Length: 232
Image 1 (cartoon, rainbow, N blue to C red):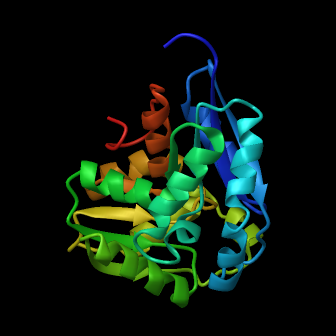
Image 2: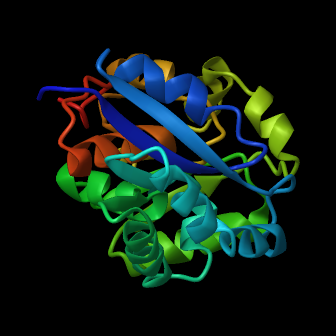
Image 3: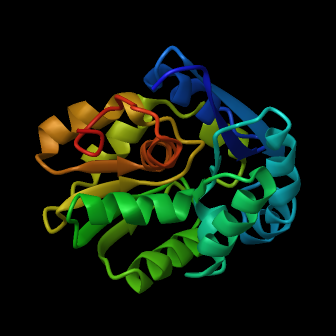
């Protein structure tokens, strides 16, 4: 790969994790650029309204001549079930005239790549969003052995959680029936916790940011050295 490459991310306005985590794992000649959709509360109504701005935000990233773009919001890309995620990718791809990924589909691709059948899910979400996430994953063919959330709706509170908080949530609710763990939410800082968790649990740990970054780099043709089995 030669030359300067640009990765675009469309994020909720209250997301403070993506722009902290992604640049740490991309090569020096790759930059990450964000465009923001209005969102303060992580509820189905707010997420639905936010998605109306996705194409507009992607079009602004096209002004920066990004090589690829990600819709970096998990529940925002699975809210309406299978099919909505692919429509998002197609709409964003048209907006930048380049490849696009959406977090929900990125997670699906990551789990499939790792050969996962049974997954334990840990989230910061309320029960309604957990139920929608379970439905989405089950429709994609995965057995959700358990799903546990923190019940947080204020997205700034989610962004204040640390990788240690994520690791603690996973360890406190270990699920021996799962062959992988998925930690959901692109505003949940998780990447530095992936390798210690995989070492302790002996199974792959996929996170929203990890899956999105991996998938975004894949479609952009960027060699990215992220944490955990997914990137290896």
